[in-house]
Image 1 (cartoon, rainbow over the protein chains, first blue to last red):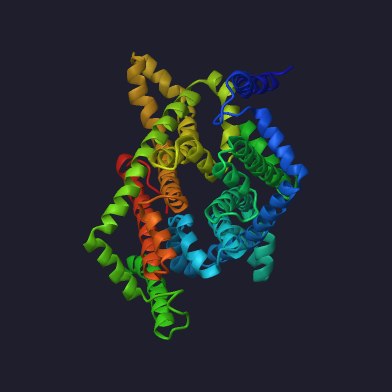
Image 2: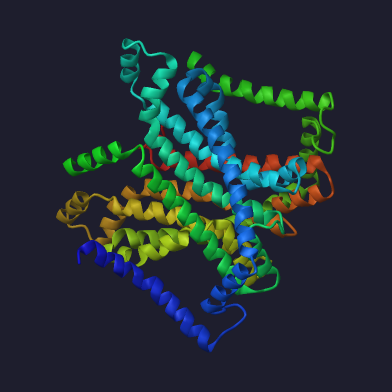
Length: 261
Length: 254
C-alpha cells in the first residue's frame, strides 16, 4: 500500500466516525431534530418508490440543463467577443464586472414580476449564474493568447475565422475549461436558490421545503445529501470530460514542467 | 488624459445609454407600469424611503445580520484554514470531510437552519456564517501552506520565537490569500442575507422587496433591487481598496 492510499484511508476515518456517532447517538436518543440516518435512507427510498423522487429529478435536471445551455453559450459568445475586440472590452467589461457584484438572488423579485412564478424565472436565474464564470474565463483565455501566435497565423494567410478556430480557441481552452466547471457548479447553486425562493415547484428542493414545513428533519437531511451528491457528480463529470478530451496535451506538458520545476 | 477618458467615459456611455433606454421605454409605455416604472419615480421612491427612515431601518437590519454572520463565518474559516494549512496531518485526516460538506449548494443549508434554529435571527445569521465559511477556509489554508519554508528557516536563524515567526512571517505571507477569501465571502454573505430575507423575514432589504412585490409596487421592487446591487458593488470596491491599502506590494491587475 502506498502513502497516497494510506492518507486517503485516513481521510475516510472522520466521516465514518461521524456517521457511526450519529447512528449510535440516535439509537438511544432519537429526537425530532436529530433523526437517525436510517430514517433519511428510508425516506429517500420511499420517495423513490412513490415515483416522487424521479419526478423531482426530471424537473430539476430539465431546468438546470436549459439554464446552463443558455447561460454558458451566451457567456462563451460574449467572452470571445470581448476577448477579441479591445473596443468592446473598453465599453462593456467594466460594466459587466460591476454588474457581477449585484447578488443574483436580488433579481428574484424582479424575475417573478417579469417572467412569472414558473420555470422561466428559474431558467433565467440559472442562466445568469452560469453566464458570468464562463464569460470572465473565456475573456481571460483569449486575452492571454500571445500576439506572436496570431502574427504567425497572419503570415500563413489564415482568415479571421481560421485564426480563431486554429489559434485563439485552442490556446484559450484551458481557461474555458475552468470557466465551464465553475459555471456548472454555480449554476447548480442557483438552481437550488431559484427553487427554494419560489415555493412548491416540483423540483428537488421540494424535499427540503416539505421537510422544513412538516418538521421532518430526515427529509431535510436527505435533500441536502441528494443535492450535494448531484453537484459533486456534475463537477466530477465536467472535470473528467475535459481531461480525457481536448486537453490531454496540456496536462502532459503540465506534469513535465512541474517535474522540471 | 486620453487614456483616462477611455477608461472612464467608455463604460459610462454604456450606462447612460441603458438609463436612456429605460427612460424611453417608460416614456412611450412599451411596458405597462405594473412591469416597469420610470427611473425618476424609482429615484423619488428611494429619496422618500430615506426621508421616512425606512431605508435606514431595513438596511440596518440586513447589515447587522451580515456583520454577525460574516464575523462568525470568517473567524471560523480563518481558524480552521490556518490549522489545516499548517499541519499536514490535520489536513489528511479532516480535509476530505470538509470537502464532502463543501459539495452542498449553500442555499440547501437554509431550510436546515430554519428547522434547527427557528425562523428568527439565529437561523439567518447561521446561514450567512455557513455561506462565508468555505471561501475563507480554502484561501487561508492555501495561503498558510504557501508560506515558503526558506523564510521560516531564516526566521529560525534569526532566533525568532514561534510567536514572532508567526506574526512576522506567516501572517504577512498568508494575508493576500486570506483577504481574497474574505472578499469572496462578503459577496456571498450579502447574497445569503438577501435570500434569507426573501424566504421569510419581517425586516431587511430582502423583505422590503418581497413586500413591495406583493403590493404590486414596482417602484419599491426596483428601488430595492438597485439598493441591493449598490451595496454589493460598494462592498466589493471597499474590499478592493482594503487589499490595496494593506498589501501595497501587490497591485491588482484589472
